[in-house]
Image (tube, rainbow, N blue to C red; front, side):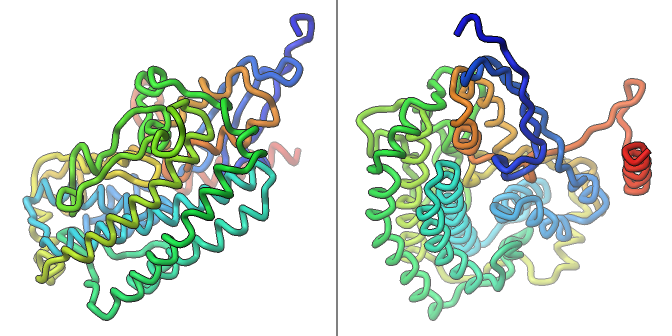
Length: 406
């Protein structure tokens, strides 16, 4: 091995092994990864720039479009920040509605990831099963909000729609379905010999590395860090129903921080989500779901608001963080989004080191990356920040295309 040359292999930014644009550069010796680097920023969409030109009520709907999987996490984080600045008190019932939708979002996100993981392992029958059972959560979300994606239910000051008693049987039906499927999914994902051989001792992230790299969510918990915003800083109805962070030893004989442990954590977090939704339905109080029904009054309150705040929620991939600063004007003076993947992506440098080429797809996927949530763009010219307009970006695109065709 020592005599074999080291080759530099780029993968991406568009590649069948990657679900979103990102460029990896590997130093490969034989089949072993000796070094790795990555370059994100391939799918930025200027979301924050657009938000800085809109009022907070409009921005909640923009937040829904940051990610096609965890839109409610972003709207909830942003709304919590604005509500703190404007001193808006969210009705208690709205907290329960927010929690139920957030947990169904977690269920469908984790099952989507499970399908992707099965596909990356070459187990496509399991991929199709995971995505088929995910549909139950998507159907319930559509039944409750009217939309399968971009739910549009969270609003500054509460939620835009209430749940009625006649909708509860459909929710309970979905929860019963998942409780009946958990054992089957656990057997297929965690007892299969091929998955064990591919995932155990693969892509290991130690507890120390996970802590020093500031990882969050299932990636951190799979390495033994008992971190969960829902338990550490309860919001919505989580303080009432309680949350127990899921660690790999709930199923395994220990905590190893490998790909297998990340599967364990996500599967058993589905079980915890089912419990949380059931308790929310049992304890849901009566009352309004919006602090103020007249949008004009909400906007007027936001327009008078001054100060800064942080909204934190536990998205399916980990902590989602929105910073908002308002200065008595219609649009925020500043708005910054830090998605879960931003915190987790540096772990790739550790967990890919020393692994085999064939394991790159499942190791990369094991942190459940979402570049649409993460990518931002900052332009610095002569030491000063600058803004790239749509016209400027289009002009640069045309110029590059002409250079390529020359």
